[in-house]
Image 1: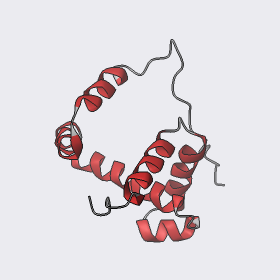
Image 2: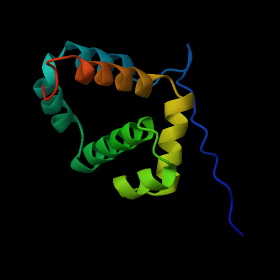
Image 3: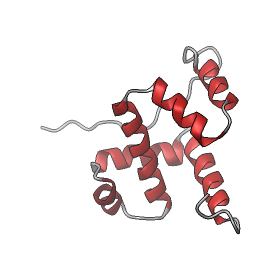
Length: 117
């Protein structure tokens, strides 16, 4: 008998429930200038598997943003529908980070003269 797994994202901790060193990590990322510096930092910070997982989730979020059905996203991203569902839950009910990044990267690539940069 299969058990259902709750895929509802857990909200970010509120005041008093801190993710240790998250603020310091965010400050370190904010201090970096440009994509090359961020990539260098992420390569030093994360294992290859962690970077691949992060990049994979970002691909899934972008495909979902294009309006593709879950099965098409799973196929194109070579992911399970469980992973697609999890990313979708965070996209729609998370802390808003996916939404901010999707909107900002979409705006950046849709500006005239910005394509390919």
